[in-house]
Image (cartoon, rainbow, N blue to C red; front, side, top):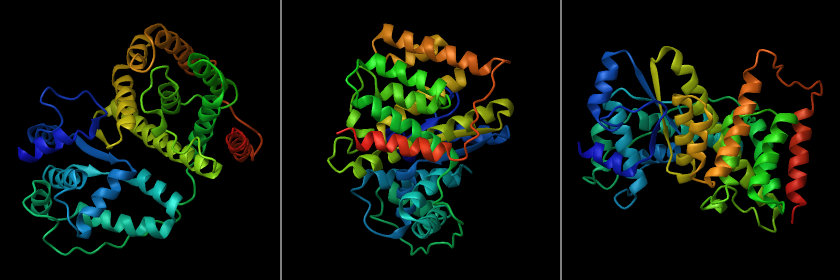
Length: 342
């Protein structure tokens, strides 16, 4: 129970399903699910995956709340047969730091995932200041994970467009509507990317600087790096949503998204709500009202639903390009817009 309370206080797990009344931190919930043949899988974001791997590498933990929470999660998951799926996190690491670094950390992650649950719980509850055993990283052969994922490329193009619009001297609502129009006519309409955009562009969005790091830097390569990070956030969310949608048909797998990032938590919560309750104008407007005035949220929700209905129409033909360089050209165009923005 102490570990459950620790995890509940850390509050870094988000369910991609309608959580039971007992919540997501009660062991009995997972024993019950196991009896029903329902598997639970945790999808950690980049930072959580790194902290999970770091727990078993030695070093002090007593004053690091996030490391202790991750140790608690490892012990909790091990005892309850909860699995981890960190593939997007290690694609992100390989893309930024190379395959060798990603393979090394993934080896530590696998060691952590198989570490003594008692050792992990002792660290989590502060009974020991770091692990009491000596661990060795497992071998991890990952191939070329540094190559960008196709979906990341698409998300990167959208993120570049969002920041380009943010620089424009336009009302927030006009920026959001222009983005929807651009996605519908020039790109593809992608839900998670759209949600990050409308949340970021919101007329009352808090902490906007944290979404696109260094966006005002004189070093425009630093601003570009910030957009790349935002594109990975979208990719984590799109993977979460894809898995939620796939699980709805058979209901044999439940997903938990793990992140300490408040913006990701807010977006993941909204996307999961839409995924489980269904996309409707009312659900979207209610969710967006956290970042927009109610009338603005209702208008954006209406426009988004029009696009959803268009895509789901039997007459809809998915957008295709005959140009094999379409994606590289869109990326180059978006990056040039950011470089020239200041």
